[in-house]
Image (tube, rainbow, N blue to C red; front, side):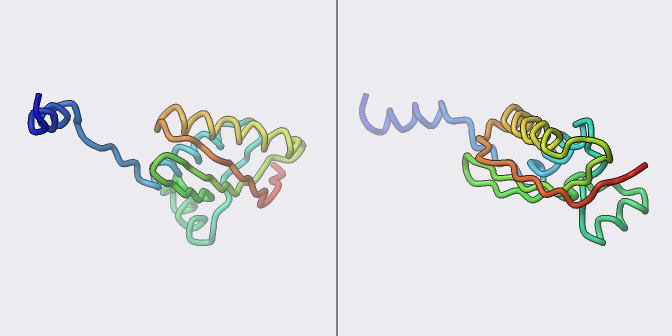
Length: 122
């Protein structure tokens, strides 16, 4: 097979590229975090709080992601429920977010950083 035939063969094997938007990764992280018992809500800025009060759900609220070609860094800001262990809840959130992102996107999560913005008493 000459070079031209090899290139044609390689071109047929290649289907295309998949690009995952940062917002998609942020939504996955936010949803995974709020599924953990002890997490009250994601923390966000005033604009996000206003959007939530108006009934429009911003699923990436309190989430900042940095996505490279194969890696992801996640920063989460959240509110925990009163009477829950912050270290235990944080560890569970880190594990849940890491697993959700890696399973759904195939990207490698480098770190999941948690900032506790508040404790909510119901």
